[in-house]
Image 1 (cartoon, protein in one colour):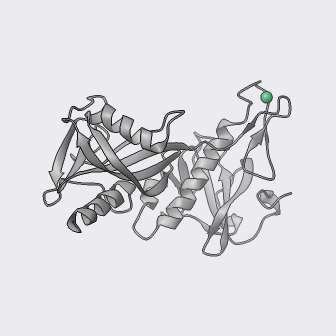
Image 2 (spheres, rainbow, N blue to C red; image 1 turned 120 degrees about the vertical axis):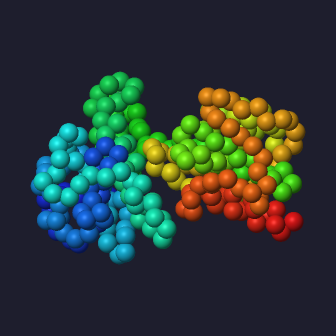
Image 3 (cartoon, rainbow, N blue to C red; image 1 turned 45 degrees about the vertical axis):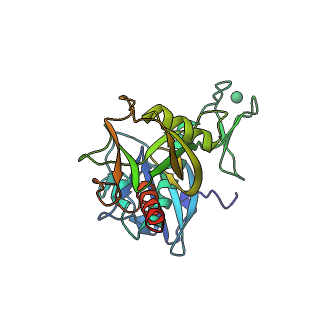
Length: 268
Ligand SMILES: [Zn+2]
């Protein structure tokens, strides 16, 4: 048995438990459970017990709740977003990794090529089909997110997904065959009809809703007039950095890029 996987029944150490049901985690008093396994609600685990990482010196184990419609006898299942609090980024990342791995194992029980039952690989995080040798790894979907500058202005858009009239940076998924820079140019053209240049990488964020790898850039306006794609956006405008609308909160990559772009503009 590799150290990635252990049997739950042979397990008694103090640990962090990521007990997953769909895209939810089991919380006790609003927090991730830390202790021995006796603190968990009673259930027969489904799928592998996987080591997800460590948290404050303790191993974090992933378990899958067997029945989507069943409620635990105590505690409650919750989405990830309540864990996205300032100062909790590492815990959020760990929980997001657990949710994504649980989703991977749940959706790769059968081979996509020949339909046979797949087995969980012991030496790496993968599933394997012994009949046709097809091997699957957890899916990550790269996407770009970009703050576009023009003089003292930033390009921000509002989408049907944004609540409270919030404006944010543009974003979109990479297509097969594209570089990240090509994704930036294509998405900005498709969403607002503008050409951009001087595209520079700033930072990235793994975003577990459901499995995005967001790659953040700053770009500069080159040419064109704003013409929005009404499917993606309800509005897009140039905002002076001294008169910004409601923008995403700290902890999001969109806010990091906006703050970075403002600092660049102010530095001249
Ligand atoms: Zn197969």
